[in-house]
Image (cartoon, rainbow, N blue to C red; front, side, top):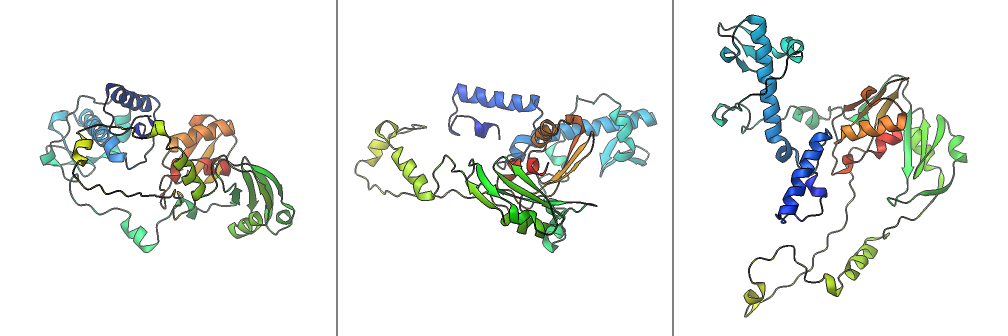
Amino acid sequence: VMNEGLPFAAVDNSKLASTARDMGGAISKIMGMQMTGGSSTVPDSYEKLRQAGAVARETLKEAAAQRSGTPRVKLKTKNGRVLFPDGSSVAYTELAADAAQLKPVSDVALRDERQWRLLGKKMLRSDIVAKSTGTEIYGIDLVMDNMLYASVRSNPGMGGMRLNYDAGRAKAMRGVKKIVETRDGVGVIADNTWRAFRAVNSIDIEWGQPDYPASSKEIWDVLANSFIAEHKNSRLKNLGDVETAQQNSSVIEAEYRVPYLAHAPLEPMNAVVLVGDDRLDIWTGTQIPGFIQDHAAKLSGIDKQNVFVHVQPMGGSFGHRLEFSYAMQAR
């Protein structure tokens, strides 16, 4: 994911581009970035998670070895248990507290591919039944005692601001508790979702215009006007002799245009927030829990260590849950 944000083409394998990608990976590790996106989980984390799993396995074995007096090299593991030579076993859960007190066993060997029991095998997803029967509990399904509900209207043009609004009708509606201004819109807090929806949609809002073109046609006009002489014929990579290949050959030309698409998952963006005197809990489906924790701590003034993000199953994302404005609005 970090590499996607660098100013280098995917085909650029120059020394500078390679060094920048290496630095991006190192920075994300130092920052403790916990995120996933761009179908990057397996490419980014496959070896790292195998290594982490091996360290955890050997550390649990060490805890079992110290408890039983059996050398770690004689212990095996299977199905969440440490196996002793005499046929007895102990669950990882029973060893976890002891293992947490030990220095992790870092000198570990990854299992040989021939010993794999799960990797490379066809596996049924653990959530397939719930998702197929409509019984999966997503973030938007959470209900808590004495919970209030909010609905927010933001400027339909991303980056545009809210200029003025009239919430007179909304304030008079049944169940409405409060009208809240956001940076680029207005929100309503009510005692159920339907009343929040009705009230927020009754507010007359004057929107500011965003900086970018308002329609697809205008976007294409801007792009077309960017093809000025000095930009034409630029090449990210130059292999072979195209000019020679075109001689005495038929040239087929075609232009393809793909519109910008909204990051609109089936499950709307949502978050549940519980604020205490010195603790903040957030329940939401997200791809960037660490970023939400950081920003929520800054916004609330609560120490980061007392901000807890409970990641929920997500009803789609398409990149939208790499953003966190909706969670900050809930706060």
